[in-house]
Amino acid sequence: MGNYSITIEKTTCPKAKPADENKLGFGKIFTDHMFEVDYCTEKGWYNPRVLPFHNLELSPASMVFHYGQEMFEGLKAYKTADGRVLLFRPDCNIERANNSNRRLMIPQIPEDLFLEALKTIVKVDEDWIPTAEGTSLYIRPFVIATDPFLGVRPGDTYKFIIILSPSGAYYPEGLNPVKIWIEDEYVRAVKGGIGEAKTGGNYVASLAAQVKAHEAGYSQVLWLDGVERKYIEEVGAMNIFFKINGTVVTPMLNGSILPGVTRRSCIELCKDFGLPVEERKISVEELTEAARTGALEECWGSGTAAVISPVGHLRYEDEVFRIGDGGIGEVSQKLYDTVTGIQLGKLEDTKGWTVEVK
Ligand SMILES: *Cc1c(COP(=O)(O)O)cnc(C)c1O
Image 1 (cartoon, rainbow, N blue to C red):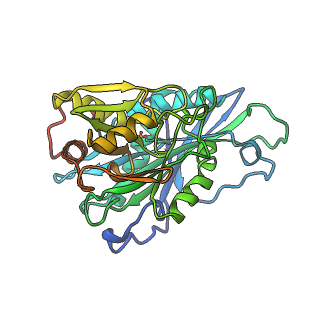
Image 2: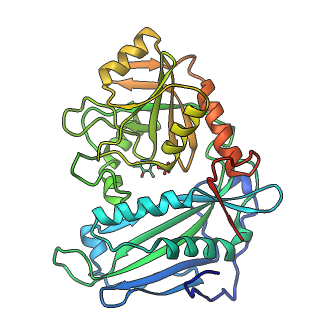
Image 3: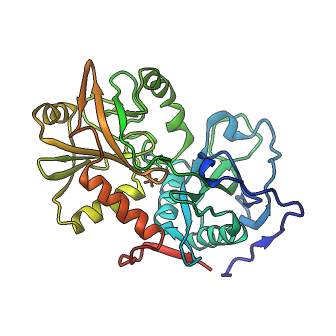
């Protein structure tokens, strides 16, 4: 394909593809192959290869198991009605991966190697891309430090791996508003920490609050800033948007918020729709006041998995706020239709956001 000689070893015993594409769920099924490339300080990245999907053999002393030096990404491949395979803004994921790597002291991955690896593995397992309404092939690239060493320092050896998972519609019954819990006890990340890197450590920090929110009947946690617990940050796997008195508002990137590709796309599209967009600090007081007075017209989360997740209810301390009529807002629906329309090749990609895998 390109400049890297990625070797391909195909499986001799392909798995049966999922029988019912409407029951895929998320992240439970994996395709026949995976991509793997190794790193050591002397050689850099070497031996890029596609292999049959397999378990890893690692020393139990591998650094990733003890101090969590790992980075991950998430994006999707789609099959269009005329049979083309499209990736959505992979350049943004590659750029973000290397920003995460920089923060996590993981070596940079050459952008052309990364893109070629994505295209190659998706091409090999192209037949695994589901086509039922709302489905896609979720792509999970990740890097782990593999040195067998219990001291604390950045690794000298790494593996960069890409696995693929056919995924179902996030909302099997169509776009569905979620209930969100504004967390006032735990925090996810602080400025100066690793909140803006896509890494497992941020997720383990979020589990206790997630369980608490689930037990109270809420599907996601909305995080406040880690210092004052005063300003809105994000939902932990999604960024957050509000429409207040006709203006779209989203928290500005501040070092502890993950810069979502879907967030960036929503901002560009809202501007195209002619809506005023503000990236700024927004306090929980401002938000709850806007909810009380009816100025809060809409709220939605943005992320690769759900694309757009309309928010119907917000809970803060002992108050529950219904947003609009608790249903799907106009802008949320329009963003969902536009982003998924471009992803599936149904709408013309005037922005050059899609990359075809040939
Ligand atoms: C991945 C992620 C998002 C969403 O980013 P997208 O690129 O839009 O998928 C938001 N917050 C966190 C913490 C994430 O890990």
